[in-house]
Amino acid sequence: MTTVRLVGSDPSVDGSFRADHQVQMGLVRALKDALPEDSRNGKATEIYDQLKVYTGAHFLSEQLLMRLHGYADYEQHCQEHEELLEALDAAQSSLQVGTMANRLNTLKIIEDSITRHIATSDVAFERFVSATSG
Ligand SMILES: [Fe+2]
Ligand SMILES: [Fe+2]
Image (tube, rainbow, N blue to C red):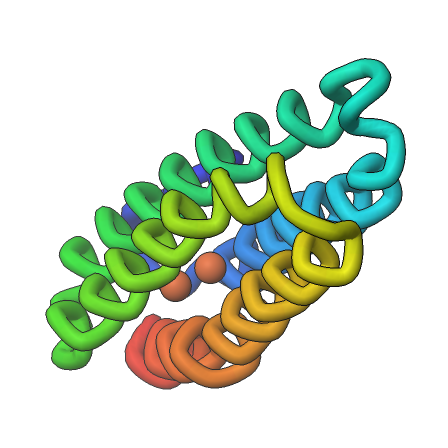
């Protein structure tokens, strides 16, 4: 989980976000690997739950940091977080039933959405923090 420091220039903002994002994407990859096994041991279901909880906690952590930094695009960024969480919720039943091709396709959509968010909105916030922290 992201460690939040409140004072001054904080290069760890980038580092801790990167660590969070690595965990997030690691869980997506683990979920992809576990999907074919899920009907036997429920491993994918467990990883899906971890991804959902971790993603929700990470988003709250990011949002707190945005508020602390007076980030102008806070509302827009929160909206994207909300949409990603809704997409994760909506994917749950698709990941548990249906053909493997459909399940992998659903996961690919989730993976692409999270990757795009990290590469655009999260990077924009990191740049804002770097530019405005003394
Ligand atoms: Fe993030
Ligand atoms: Fe974000």
